[in-house]
Image (cartoon, rainbow, N blue to C red; front, side, top):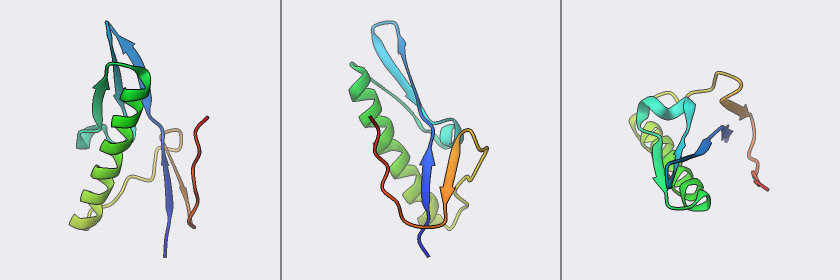
Length: 82
């Protein structure tokens, strides 16, 4: 059975760089940065994907909450950010 996880990420200006993190996965290392907002967003997306894959491979639970940080759908979906 396939599930779709949507993780909230925060991207904010920190001096002359952009800081990005995923609150639900921060304890797993979901923190990064970029020279631009777009670069930071791209990097945090890659980090979240790597962490979720590692958790799956280890048989560990993927966080499914809190609700404001993670939304889980019981089926396969495509997320589009605009």
